[in-house]
Length: 222
Image (cartoon, rainbow, N blue to C red):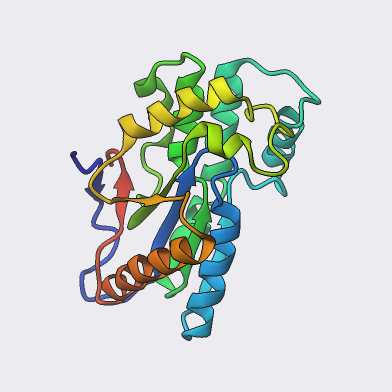
């Protein structure tokens, strides 16, 4: 699998920085729980860490997305895709500033969700990627892998627009198409503690590598 990020030379190799860690997966795969636990673990070790989530529903764009996801409004598929992308661009500069200051960001969903969900609706995958080009590339993507049928059995399923079994099956296939060299696939059907331990080990290595001066790079191209 090819790595889809490209070095943007956004910082010198000698500079220590925080890591950009992204958790991805189907709805109800455990991302929110694990991302919260991961942040607490890194903080307990003395690392400056923040938890981010997309969509960020606190912004004006995010509020439009929230209304759509809760079935309170209707939008064209391309329109909502561009809103999701705009929601990530809103915080792009802040993301770079945080990372350069040494803060590690644990991000619950990122560009891959946008592309996987929109292309699962039938939109062209390359068209879906285009608005994301130039956003920062994660240092590691933690994909919590779970069969859609298992995810559907978890509490709260079906509360939002995309939580439909047949649609989630399509999303899972699109994620497989997006998987690249910096992805780590984790069996989300393992116990919560087993998943947590795997994530901690992977992310700690990643954080240390970034502290040693790994350059930031851009998503898909620069």
